[in-house]
Image 1 (cartoon, rainbow, N blue to C red):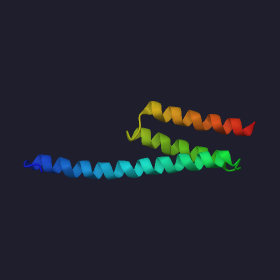
Image 2 (cartoon, one colour; image 1 turned 180 degrees about the horizontal axis):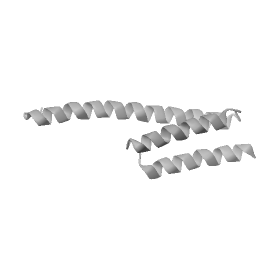
Image 3 (spheres, rainbow, N blue to C red; image 1 turned 30 degrees about the vertical axis):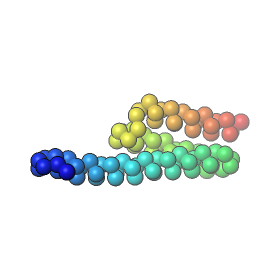
Image 4 (cartoon, rainbow, N blue to C red; image 1 turned 90 degrees about the vertical axis):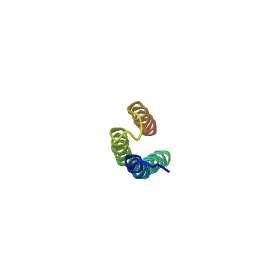
Length: 87
């Protein structure tokens, strides 16, 4: 346990940020999973699911939950899958 006041504060801040980031990651994973399921089932709302997934991915990258290149890769993969479904 930290003895210095500032170190105690950093522990509290880290706990809070960890909680927020884990919630964001969970939302990200859930959204991507729903998008993949919509694409796999040839759902007519797959385009809307992709739009929502891209929005969440961009927000996660902006908040440094994931790296920007990871975000680009995931968006590209989902868009490629949607385009393959359309053919």
